[in-house]
Structures are given as C-alpha cells and as structure tokens.
Image (cartoon, rainbow, N blue to C red; front, top):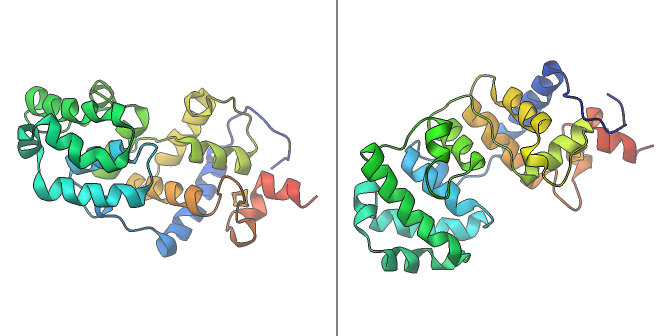
Length: 226
Ligand code: SF4
C-alpha cells in the first residue's frame, strides 16, 4: 500500500481484508439499537430515514414511541399528519416530516403494505435516497447491497488513500468500493460493522489510530508515523 492519494480502485483482495478486520472488531464492539433487533423492512426503512443527519440517541426515543403507537404500515397510514409531526418533532429538521407521511402512504397504496425490495423501487419512494435504500436492502432483506455515507467515505479515504471530491459519496470509485465491500457473505453485518467502525474508531476529528485494528495497513496512519 502506498501513501500517495489515488483515484484507483483498491484490489478486491485488499477490500476483503479490510472488511474481515472490521467485522472482527464489530463482533466485540457493536452498538445495540431497537431497529437492529428487527428485520422488519418497514421499521428499518423508517429508522434509517430518521437517522439521516440525526443522532441515534435522539432517534431511539422517537422510534420507540412511534412504533408503540403505530406498529405497522396500516396503523401508521391511519395516523394524521399532525400526529406524526408531533411524534417526529424532537428529531428537528421539520422539512423532512412530510416525507414520512408520503412514504407510508406510498408503501400502503402502491405496494400493499410491503416495503419493496429493489433499489429502483425504494429510491422512487418519497425521501428515500441511495443510502436508505441500500440500508433497507442489506439490513432488512440481507441483500448484497452497498451503502455509502460521509463517514464511510472518510474511512475509505484514510485507509486506502483514495482521492475524492466533496461529493465523495456519489463518486463511481467510492460506490464501486462499497459494492465490493458488501458483496461477501452477511452483507447485513458487514454494513452495520462499517457504520459503527467509522463512527467509533475512525472518527472525523481525532481518529483512534492507536487502538485501530486497521492501522498496520492504513494509508493515513502510515503517513502520520513518517
Ligand atoms: S488507523 Fe486511524 S485513520 Fe486508519 S482506519 Fe484506523 S482509525 Fe482510521
């Protein structure tokens, strides 16, 4: 591995080694959240929509209340928009609240209460982008589908020494890496693992390199020790 930034895709073998170390770390350090205890695609979809730009601890309280009052698509579709707004209020970002009502309606009317299981159909739902679609497909349906968020871009960038622009999560070489990463067995675990790893170890400001299981091959750590 070199210390120079590159826009080349790392080898599949390198990505697989990275993946196996992250999964090993995750087996001992994973975070527990209520939306991780279920495979219900509707609950995963709503949780992932809530988690966009919001802290998990904030989401936890709202998630519990929402699904206690409205446990499924049918029940949530009957809730008035005012009621939904009231429950979702603590999440902030009021502008996105209407998307929840719309997505529930679309799943009920267009898909007879069953959350679709293709990226094309999911990204056609209100407020559902590539990240949320990939999360639902891998975490709820167990499909070998990729996810990329800014934390994952940061980790790829530091570890593999790749170049990215500000729009890193949309760049082809980044998405291609995430596809290879998710292509092994147990994509659910692999994707949850990289999310936790990037949030807890390879943190934005002060990455915890001394305790990181990736440090011996990490481009960033190697360049810092020079
Ligand atoms: S060694 Fe440091 S920079 Fe590299 S992946 Fe680990 S925490 Fe991130």
